Image 1 (tube, rainbow, N blue to C red):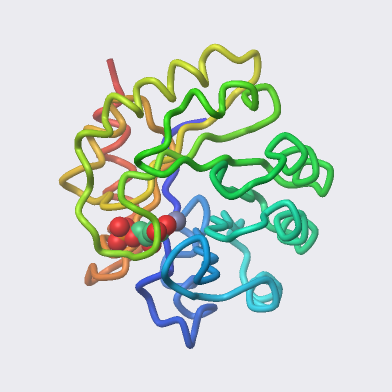
Image 2 (cartoon, rainbow, N blue to C red):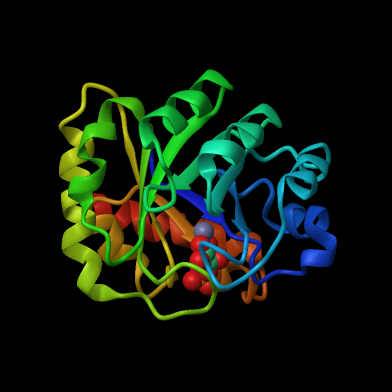
Length: 222
Ligand code: DX5
Ligand code: ZN
């Protein structure tokens, strides 16, 4: 798998999600849907009913990022609704291994997210059961924040952990990713890039997706 771009609709027009997805549709590998519950993060977006409705109207696979408490209860439902990838936060899960297994059993790829202050050692035991590590590069909750460059070594460590597995595990970065930051992340070993404001504030969002992918590919080349 090459470099993948997953535009986040968080800062797009949330009252017309299907149209916003179409603005990047063919260029994007995924569409990143930030589910927030006002408990795990201090912000509230949309939940499963909205995601279910949206999935009926779009063709690009959904990359659901669950910033919610109790993913043990809620995460499998997003996979059952047809999301291609479901990422839960390790900090929020009571039984992370069970959550991972339940998401997989429901037919989606499994991502596990870590906040900036969470050490990657807490996901070590999950590695055989996941498909993606999400290294948050801002505090989760809001779009448009500045990329935390001090997390670059953590991206490198995530890449080493992913490579230690027998299966292909992706390393996703989310928060402050754009033309100025994507290359350092790709060089550090990330291969799935969430970009919200960089894409949706661009005059041509689909073109920005192509440009971001090209930058990541260039930076990753040895
Ligand atoms: C933040 C969300 C991100 C957000 C990224 O908690 O998880 O997906 O949309 O937005 P930008 O790219 O603007 O930092
Ligand atoms: Zn996100």
